[in-house]
Length: 298
Image 1 (tube, rainbow, N blue to C red):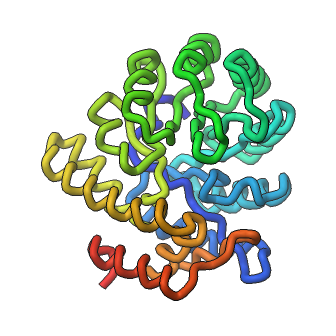
Image 2 (cartoon, rainbow, N blue to C red):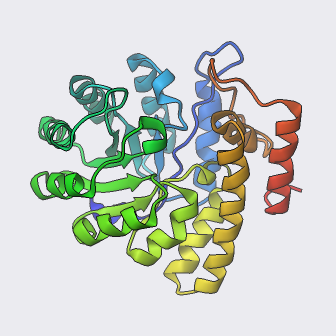
Image 3 (cartoon, helix red, strand yellow):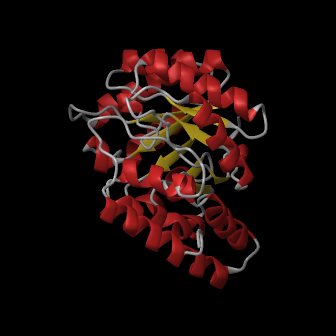
């Protein structure tokens, strides 16, 4: 996968589980068809919304293998391979490479707070250990630390196989600075739905956002209208996407709400894995009302 291929809408998709917490790979295959039919540019598996921290190494391999098999070359498959340590991250990335993933999404190391030098050395070491194209992943709301644009610049300058970054900070200023520093060398993708259109306007190439999991066509439409120069239409679509984001992703339990938003469209997204709990009846009603207002369901 080249940076030129990293454009458009990539759902960071869910991992369906049965009620008792086992992987539901048949349900995952049906979900893959839903996303591809939605016109997405590719799939991101084993990311945050895929509940990757809840998955064992073997489970990650099964999920990645299943998605790649079901996709069957129709769109690129990007595997989430970030771990707490550099050693674990390399192992997970090599697994994805061996399974045939097109690229790896590598989240910043979390739990401990690391210096810029440690972040730089981490990404450089991972990049040198594999041939797989890498996408940096900055998601401070989950990791507790934001990747410094200077580190991004340093890594991109020294690692030829880094082709992109997903920034989920929600900060337009941070996205702007990343694009200023490396936007001509890698694809910069919005990781926050609220920043989708603004990222495109600044020179970004697309998005890896949770709303695309349950509203893939809506997100695809925004991207296509922007590319066609229909900015007023794109702005209206952004307003709808931000509305959905405010309810399903921000207000409610994100992992459970996103799965429910897929399931009420007749697609078996399964249960979240404990300790995450399914939505209550009132929360379900809120998701349903939000999707009705957005015209996704009737």
